[in-house]
Length: 92
Image 1 (cartoon, one colour):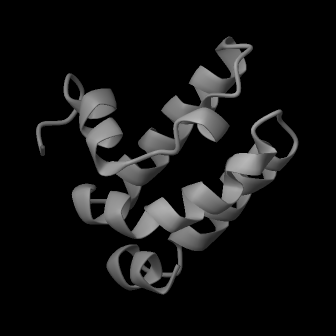
Image 2 (tube, rainbow, N blue to C red):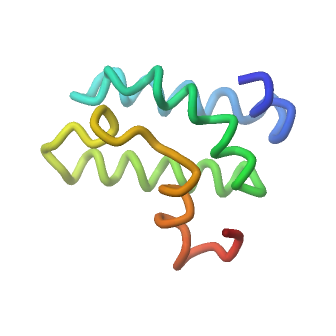
Image 3 (cartoon, rainbow, N blue to C red):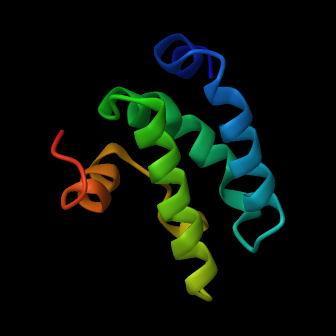
């Protein structure tokens, strides 16, 4: 989390906390640790706090729309970030 706060500032921490709280309340609660472990790599690929929030919103939307435990079976990775954002953001 320190590297994420260093890159985006401490303003990123409440958004990440809210995301984790929503994950905890979902069937994807077991994916919290892999998500936290992947955050430094993901944050290096994203260039702004807005893109990080966009990423978390897309993942939450996907989790809401599916019945599978997406995050538990496929932890987020920098490659997944590129696939999700390729059409929306040109940074990969």
